[in-house]
Image (cartoon, rainbow, N blue to C red):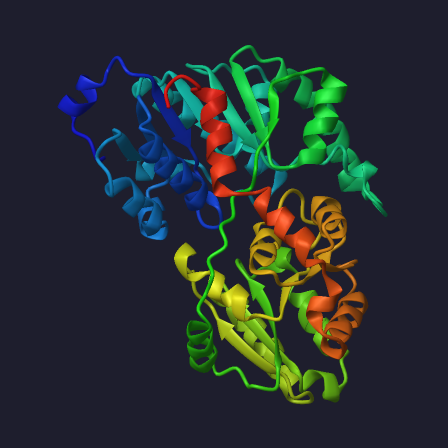
Amino acid sequence: MKYSAPARQSIYNSPRLMLFDLALGGHHGNYIQHLVERAYQQGFRGAIDIVVLPQFADIHQDTVAAIDRNQDVPIDLVPISAAEATSLGSRHSGLSRALRNVREWQIFCKYAKDLQTTHALIMYLDTCELPLAMGMQSPCPFSGIYFRPTFHYKMFENYCPDRHDKLQYWRERLTFSRISNNPQLQTMFCLDPFAVKAIASQHHTTKIVHLADPVQPYPAMPSDLATLKTELGIEAHRRVFLLFGGLDERKGIYQLLEAIQLLSSELCDRLCLLLVGGTDPARQATIHQKIAVIRQTLPLQAIEHYDFIPEADVPPYFQLADVILAPYQRHVGMSGILLLAAAAGKPVLSSDYGLMGELARRYQLGLVVDSTKPTEIARALATFLSVSPPTLSNPSQMKLFAEQNSIELYASTIFKQLFPDLL
C-alpha cells in the first residue's frame, strides 16, 4: 500500500472511492490509470483505493508509476491476498464461472467493508450479474462498467443468433431488471451506445450512461517507424498486416492462418503477417508450427513477437501497419483494436458480428467479413493486397470514431456521474 495507517486515518472523513478489478492485461490497467491521472489533474477531494490481483503491479507497471508520480491525492493500490486470489478458481466452464463470480462478489464486499468505502466502481460489472440477480447486498453504494450486453444485437445487420445467443438474450432479460432496480446501484456505465439507448427505452431507467472507450492517438515520427521496421526485419516490398493483443482462439488466429493458405503465391509474396502480443507457450508453439507449414509452400513473411507491449509502445505498431486484423470469433462488446486502428488512421479487416461489425460498418473502418469462414477472410486479404488499403476506409469517419472515445471524455464522464462536487 502506498499510504500508511496514520495517513489513512487523517483522511478518514473524506469520501472514499474503491476501484475494484480482479482481471489483468488488455485495457484493465489503462482504465484505472486514466482515472488516477484525472483525479490528480483535477484535484479530486477524496481518497481512492484500487483493489486488484496480487500480480497487477508486475503486469501494469505504467499504472503503478502513474499512482506514484503524484502525492497530492491519497491513492492506495490494494492487492488482495494470494489465498484470496487462489480461491477465485477458473472460468473454464459455466459452473466454474458462476462460482468465481460469486467469490469475486464476496471479496468485493469484504474489501468495501474493511476499507470503509463510501462508493465503489466495479470496473467489470458483468462478473456481478449473478450475485446481484440473486439479491446479494453490497456494503456501500456502487456503480459499474457493463461491457457485454447482447440482447440488442438483433437490431444489427445480418445478425444470425445461434442457440447460445438466444439463451444469453433471455438470461440478460431476466437479470437486467433485477440489477437496474437495485437501490444501491447508482450508475451503470456502458461502452455500447446502441445498448444504452435500448436499455433506457425498454427499462425506463436513467441509471445507464454511455461511456467512451478511451483511446489516445500517439503521433509517431517517421524515423521511429523506419527504425522499428528495420528492427522487426520487415521486407520493403510487403504490406504489413498486424494482429495485436492476446493471440488466442478468440482473436481468430487459426482462421486467419487457414485463410492465408488459400492465397496465391503472388499475393503471399506481398504480405507480411505481424503478430504482436502475449500467449501461453503451448499456443505459441502451435501458431509457430502452423506458420512453418505455410512457409513450406508459400512465400509468406511472418514476424512473431510474443510479448506484452506497454501502452506507450503500442501506437508505433499500428502506425507502421498497412492493415489491422480483427477477425474475432463472435466477439461480444467493444474492441479497443478498432479504436487503436482508427486513431492511427489504418483500415481494419473486422469480424461482422455484433457491436464490432456494426461499428466497422457505420464508421467505414475497412472490410467486414464473417470471420468464422477462412474463405471470406482470404477474400478480404486478397482485396487489401490488390488495391491501396486506405481506399477501403473513410478517414474522416475513423477520426470521428476516435474523437468520440477520448480519454478525457471517459474519465470526465465517470467522475461527473459519481462525484460532481469533488472535482
